[in-house]
Amino acid sequence: MKINDSNSQRIGLSKMTGQTFFIGTRKANGQISSISRGIDPMEFIELFKEKGEVKVLVDYSPLIEQLHDLHKSYNEKETRDEYNSMFNYWQEAKTYEDKQYRMYCSSVLTTKASDLINKLQQKLQKSQSDGDLTWKLNPYQMHGTHQMVDAFKIDAEMYMDALLIYIHSKASVEINSFKKDTVLSAYGEFLQKLIHEMYVSIVGKGGNNHSESFLKYLAFESASDFQQHMALSGGGESRSDFILRIVQEKKPCELNNCEKGYPMEVAIHYDNFWPNLMLIIEMLKELLCKIQSINDLLKLLRAGGVEWDADGTSGDDLKALLKLNQ
Image 1: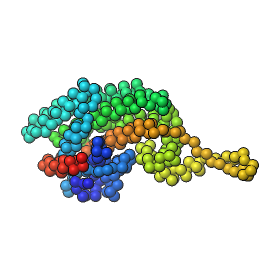
Image 2 (image 1 turned 180 degrees about the vertical axis):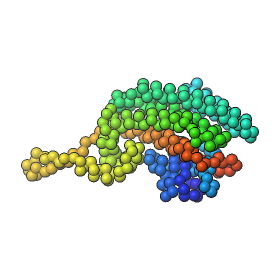
Image 3 (image 1 turned 180 degrees about the horizontal axis):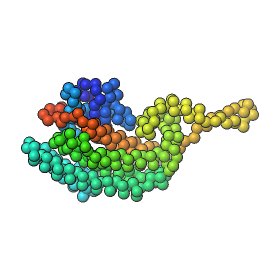
């Protein structure tokens, strides 16, 4: 469902399973590029509308409010209180109309968001270093691994919520300031790199080549998931082309079976990724797609030619759309 019907490149948010949201870009041909890298969308909500040659960023306050409803009770008390305090200040700051006071509030909110993001960075880094996944992938030890990744997911989602609030506050006051932004971009790139490292450490299972093991498993055992993970790995092959290539790269071996005339055989070997492990991989895949999409949003804002939705009418449309899809 779209807020507008323009066919130029846009960016938006996809509603997933009624619980989470993330941003994706729609190309001129209608393909949803960021989402297609990872998750097929159930619903797509565009965040840009066209105004002549200029893109207008929709006031996505309703989305932030729904994300807060999902995450406000998560995490340890100190972090949760800081997250809720930031959200409450953001809610209050939006009520003011005076430009100068709104700029002051945005400065305070920037500090609050940065403080929370920096603390979450430390927690996320510690989770990664303490939880070396390469030795926790035994199927009989998966409970502890699930708990570790669940905790990482909570911190990562709160991190992205804070990032979206930071972006919203900055855009609503001075959207052209993104042209010189380095801080928000660094925050986004940090989390994307961290999640990608965790993702690779699991799909690589302690050193095996990702494309030659995990993708083989998907190609033969879980075909519907293959293309999503192929795109995340940076490749563009279709499943059929991938299978053809790996078969052609193998040298046939002669079987010691004289009754059948010593037939030739091509053997394909790959690791087994049991269901509990796949649940963790899917969780990290979703997080990776979310932060990639937020980084795509920041790239578009840095490119310029964007205005803020000052009248707020599209924000009302977005709020109605989110309510409709609950």
